Amino acid sequence: MLLSKQKKNQNANNAKRRLLISINVLGSAGPIRFVVNEEELVEAVIDTTLKSYAREGRLPVLGNDHSAFFLYCPHLGSDAALSPWDKIGSHGARNFVLCKKPQAATNEAAAEDGSGTSSLPRRGSGSWKSWFNLNLKVSSH
Image: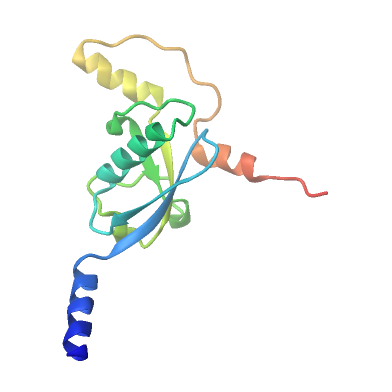
């Protein structure tokens, strides 16, 4: 009896493995943490993050268009964003950074739709790593 119960639990755990992930939103006070299925797509994780962010009333207001954001994994050592069609568990990481896509890319997409508007040029390099590294330098007393 006990042996068959253990086998059922192992099969259930293998079928639906869940992960606690932490997503830092650039410009926000702290990370958002929630549990996801490791088979969940990156696109769905971004959508869940935006909904949780809005539900908590965090600032700055981001909106709910998941296609306007990139999800990065700083521990992978790559400047490339994760593909929206990747599975979140395929990278073996649990800490991510959510960044808004550059304004120029958003304006190009809007121009293709015929609703494009000109925007002011961005200040700074636009690299999330440079912003992230600058904010991590804390002087010790």
